[in-house]
Image 1 (tube, rainbow, N blue to C red):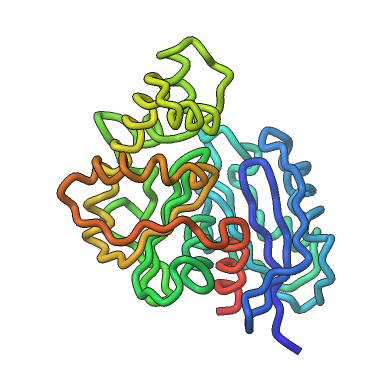
Image 2 (image 1 turned 180 degrees about the vertical axis):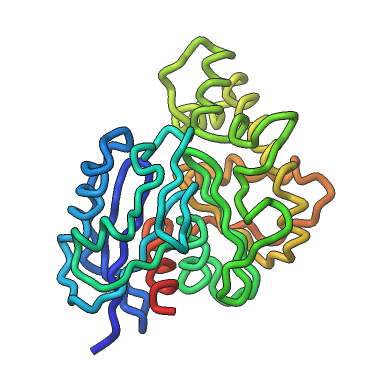
Length: 286
C-alpha cells in the first residue's frame, strides 16, 4: 500500500482537504468547503474540519496543513490581526482545535506559498530544478523560496514574504493585489465593479485605462522582486494564483520592471490547484 498523507489547504475563503500519495504525488478525495473569513473562531474551525471530515483517516495520521500568513507555524497559533480575514483566530491554538475535530495525532503547519512552491518543485513546473521561487498572485502577493527541497529564507524579502516589500513609499500589496488593481481601475474609470480578470480582458483589447493600471502594477512587481530573485539564484520562477491565467499579458510588464536584472525562466504553474496540497503532504511526511 502506498503511503498516503491527509492534508488541508486553507485560503481566505475556502478550505480544501485531500489525500496525497507520497509515491506518485497523486491527489485524491479532494473536497472544498467555503469559509467565511469574518465568522467566529468556532465557525471557521468547524468549516476547516468539515473539509477534513470527508476523508477516511486513521487515528495515527499526521496531517499537513497549508495556512496563509500571519501564523506561528511551529506552534500552530494564528496571528491574524489587521489583515481582514480570520481575525477571530488571532491567538487561537489552531492545532489543538483541529485535534478535537479531526482524527489523527499530529498537525504540521506550513505557509501556503511555501507549500505551493514545494509542490511545483516536486511535481510541477519547478521539477528538475534546484532553486525555485514561487509567486502566488491573487488577493495579495505570496512568495516561496525552495533550495533542493528545503524552504529557504532569503535576506530579502524579510522571512521570504513578498508582502513585506515596499515600493514607491508603501507596501507592495498597495500596488499589486486584487484590491489595489481594482481600486486603481475604479479611480481611473469610475468602474468599481470590474474584477482583475475583466480588467485583463480589457487590456488585451487595448483599453487604455486597463493597460495603464496593469502595466504600473506589474512593472512595480518586477522592480520589487527582480533583484531578490536574482540574488536568491533562482533557476526558475513558478507563477500561481488567480492572476496566473493572465500571465502571458502580464509577464512583459514584469520583465520591464526588473529592467537589467537577468531573470530565469518564468513559468505558469503546472499544478495550480494541487501544488499546495502536495507541498503540505511533503512537509508533514518529513
